[in-house]
Image (tube, rainbow, N blue to C red; front, side, top):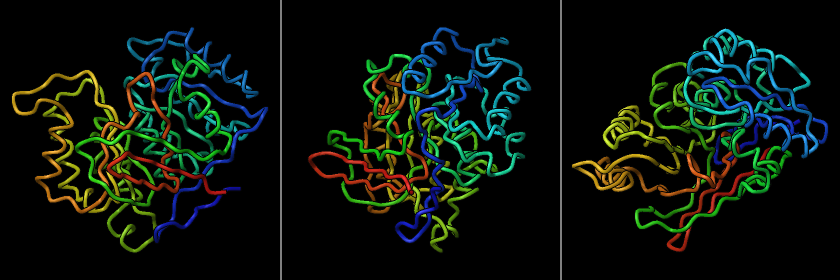
Length: 328
């Protein structure tokens, strides 16, 4: 049984049990609909790893842009969470719609969340719920890329993490990086989804990583990870200002910036990272590591990240290393 490890003066979140050969993995579609063939591919890949896959009843469904009615998507997740034999819940894709389910899922007992959640993008909303319940989760690739097996660059890495392995991500130096070394636990995800939860019960800086909890050492100091797709530069800047005015950047031990894709330059900034660099320079952020261009987000080579687990970030002029371990 994994426990909350004390790091950097505070506690990390509890890690769910490792997956083993024969572990049951539920595939759900909590948001947008997906080509059923992609679920079939992911099922084959996961079964080749020795896991038993359970495709929930509405995972391959369609209702407008969603995989099903909110009640149907909720039913699949509730049943997967309540099933004690399920060791991991793999989301088929993001899109939009996970936020519809938060209030109802929040009513389930905390122990139901003692299983791995895997996904990213719109699944950030569910990661925030897992955080609220006190459990670590895996920001990682979903059905489309899992189904490619070893052709997906981080396939073996993601499978190893689910089996209890530690994680190390390497990245090249970036001219905007603010070098340093920090310890803490990662939280965040898709910036637009995170921005929509600011000030709610599902805001991780409201539910777990409050100023009081961080300063007292009740929880480990958070590291903010962000990524996004198809968001205009000014909208991303607006959410960063929300986070700043919320006091988030005085609370974190590092800022980890993943991929921001499919946007256009603006009249004010040539690219997203330039805007961010100017933003951080303007707010007087503490002397903490700020790293850009991590290989995490809406890209072909989407590296996994553990949310809530002990993490060390080392940013030097020669590159960035992010080391994560699970608490056993």
